[in-house]
Length: 257
Image (cartoon, rainbow, N blue to C red; front, side):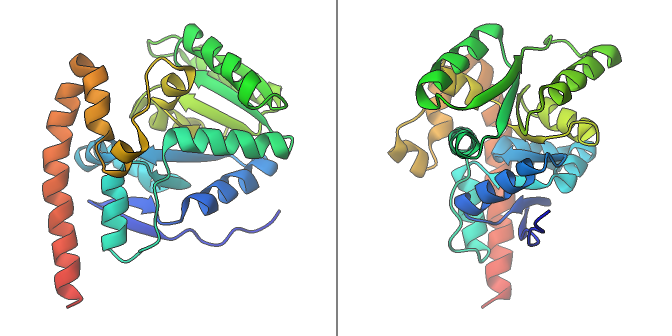
């Protein structure tokens, strides 16, 4: 197996975030997937880092993750301010598209776990158009309630039996990250927690225009689409993150004056 270089990380409000440009993070995922290495990737935004800040058990999940990509632009800005000037955004939907493209070209197979049967059908339909030669090893929509140990083992056996190199997981944060961490030694593939990327790719929700994403306002665009579900989450996580991250950046800059 090719040995990958150590992945640089930046600590943002106590959680490690991988400081590598988008293409190098995709290269790393694909390299692991060639050998069906049991790894897991967390796609981090403000909500995820605040969950980890408040919950020690979840913090340990991010600490042990093999990659923690900077999904939200606020994370990208903090990483740049802390010295990694070339960092760009490594967002869930972009990861999905890039990994599928690379998997198709290298004859690697993918497996989708999570979301609803309707959403999975939408994903399969779009994949057939976008990546006609991509091998989809399987799609499973588990129950939304907690799975029993037997159900969980059946899911793992299904994934491993499919021969998939890559597993896209969408249970929502922090459930999907906890599930990947708990099962990393049993699943013989690279797992990537994508959450809302399933619904975006299937066309259930529209993605924000590029200029909105670059301005760091994608949260507002999503809030307008799902106000009942997201207003409380954003209200509880964005203000404290801004305070904590700003304090961290100011302290860093003051030490380097």
